[in-house]
Image (cartoon, rainbow, N blue to C red):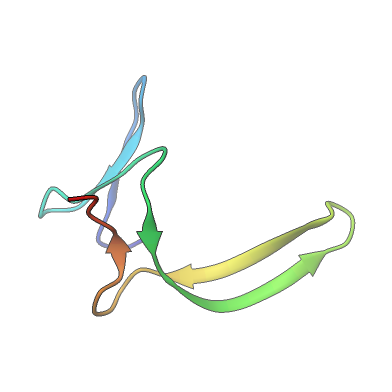
Length: 61
């Protein structure tokens, strides 16, 4: 997430210069570039991006 900076603390967040925040419980719209099944962990891993029109945190307003 090149436009976002990680801000550690009790409730860590990612924030960009427009004060857009990504934190726990934030809904985020993104594009999946690649997905793979990891057999040992029994989970999917995804490579995704937030750059683009209408991508990123979704306002609940």
